[in-house]
Length: 257
Image 1 (tube, rainbow, N blue to C red):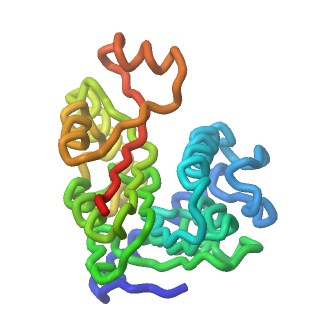
Image 2: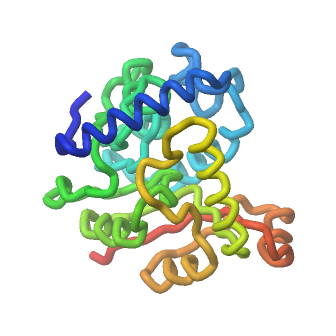
């Protein structure tokens, strides 16, 4: 798999990846059977199958969004094990899948497990996407990884410059917290406990780790349309009535012709 990272980043990444893989190997929920990758996100014979429910809804939305479009140039940012890139490629689109992990189960190394080999995995530093500055894409998908960027809005602004005329930037898996102080405390505690138990940092980069309602306003101001998702009454109640809840949404930005 091609890797476009600096030697300094590669050295740091290798240390983090080695620690992460050793940690994940201790968990029973890490490994997906190689024969099941082609079925993702719909197979139920996977660890923590309930976590794939939201990914199924993401795919349904994306397929509807691209239903009348053929042969799109698509960049998937934060592609993880490539399940979405595989699906989009099988629909006839040209797909580049980027992430900084290349593990064969928790990264782009999983590419070898898919029958479809047409999508293109590329290991990069997600906080420095300048290598794509001369590229243009019809659709860019930030796949459930926004909270892991050091500066999400700078990344979003840069990705906008990579869009073709009438191109779209889609951010999936946004969880907007209402009580950000409580969430900040929860994340800081979680990071400290993780380091104490495992001896390495939980996140490779310094991150805030959440989006709050002010960030939601910032998304709207910067031209994104918010789609509350999924549409159900429980989510509506949480969104509007419960002070310590979060709600799920997608964000879509479309460039002008």
